[in-house]
View 1 (cartoon, rainbow, N blue to C red):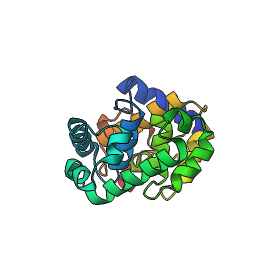
View 2: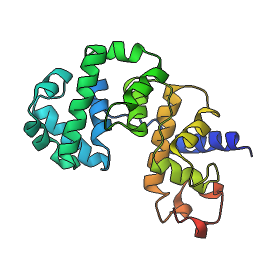
View 3: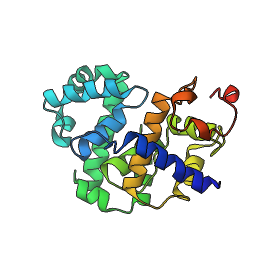
View 4: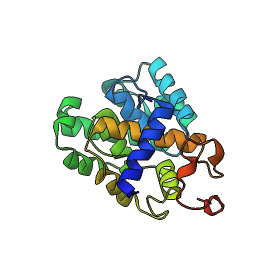
Length: 223
């Protein structure tokens, strides 16, 4: 089986198992962007608590969040950790958003996604995974998001090298799949869920829907 066919087979199996996962869970593009920044170095449950706090504090809009005092934001986003750093990152993004696009999501996402990606990566605190999450989940751009769950599951199934870079993994997917934002959205969500449920650091292959597709013996699965 070619790697492309194996990639499609994995998608089919996981899609049948999980169904439509409807990622990213958010109310509009700004909430997606806030979540993408806050989720750095923490789990989604903590991010949800922080976003709920911002919502209750009536700060989930670019204008209000930009005007808010740092101390106020820090207090509200404490559940997601690194709250001072993340407050600065939110404010830095907002400065970029207002300066470059006059706080217009339509203007920002009407740009070619490759050029927008370059600009996002120049914003302090926004790395590749965060930038691509913004492009895919907030802007519906056909950009595949890569994370540690993706790398772990795909390396165990012999699709990628365990030491592959972010860009190498991303190109692997984007060169073999149609350029379709909805497909990339669902595929990434499927990989994350499968890695969390089954492809853990100590894998649960016997109960995994992909258990018979392993690329190398279980005893070698240490990453």
